[in-house]
Image 1 (tube, rainbow, N blue to C red):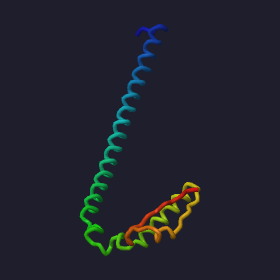
Image 2 (cartoon, one colour):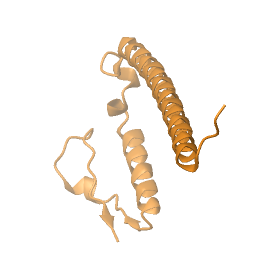
Image 3 (cartoon, rainbow, N blue to C red):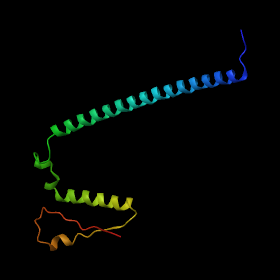
Image 4 (spheres, rainbow, N blue to C red):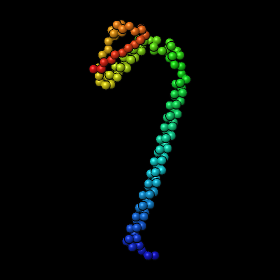
Length: 121
């Protein structure tokens, strides 16, 4: 058997290197495809859970159908929840919230109307 000269040895080494690089690229492509399929499967599962929650929420009775549970029937509770939310929002923004309760008596609104004029300082 004849020995390879230097030029042939380099050509064979380059060919082997090229085959190794091609095989690793194919492996990485298969791995990327598997990752994409797994992520797609997870997103479909999440979407189906959200759709199930949406269907469940749509079948629940709403406050309009049951007025005794409506916060519009309890304006003090609704305004307290709004004030609490605004205070939390102001605290998150590192701001101060100034509110006054005397303005409601001055207006000519219906008693079940609630208004808010927040001022962030």
